[in-house]
Length: 360
Image 1: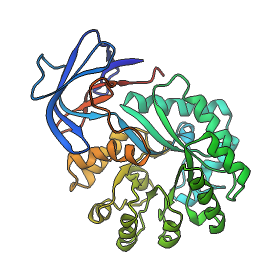
Image 2: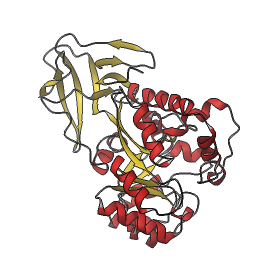
Image 3: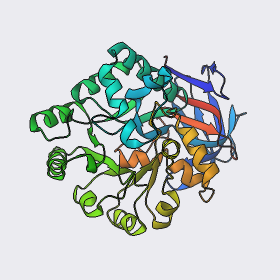
């Protein structure tokens, strides 16, 4: 459903009935420009101008594109309802194949898994996220589960699947690639490296996305990481400055998930990433640990790493992931759907949303 939503953490919806305007500062890949957008009852942008809106705006603030959550695992959303005392190490909780998460995914009924996924999808869409990149566990079945959970929802996935076992099977990989946007693996330390190489080669031959978690708990061999030619990396919390400098040389962006890292007592490398000049994206990681609300991730970075400007922070959840995930970046122009959010200039809290949202 297309609509306009005012969201101060209350569920209040207002639907477009005539031309409406927002003004303030419009965010583009080049930064902020003072101006306004006018959109009609069909939620299509029909006017883009400089300065103040010609009529009283429905909101004034920072006008930004809808959000992209660059790294999720929403398949484990159901676990947060189980009230389990979760282990606080990556190996015990999420490492395949015997981490607690994977045990529960194998043992839990399909309906329960789907219900958790649908709740996370609804929360993301309601909060202004239009796209999310999910690392799909459980092979082909995991892809089917996500696609089922997305039926009727106005939010768009980038599905990075993974094989059921930590080994290369050409038939399985080809099936996964036929039904997803690419492959998203766990740490290369979980695999025999020759098998990872075969997976990477297969993905690149199909011109799909290849990504994986890197140097999350321990520093991993940067030569091995880069030889796989990933489209992006996740975490890199234990990477050294020289490691990251080489990542930068290859123009590989990195997703950081600071709230998830904090659960394990880890600290993301965001200051070093900024110093080296790597493009940073934000993700919410495992839904059993943190809500998939990407603005909460942004606020966490804003409050804990104060050297980032608003432009840098907002790029992490808008234009940078759109570029990395091959999504359209020309989204705030005339004759395009009004998929934008107006944020408070200082608070970065949502004042007004004109976007697709989930009907739940």
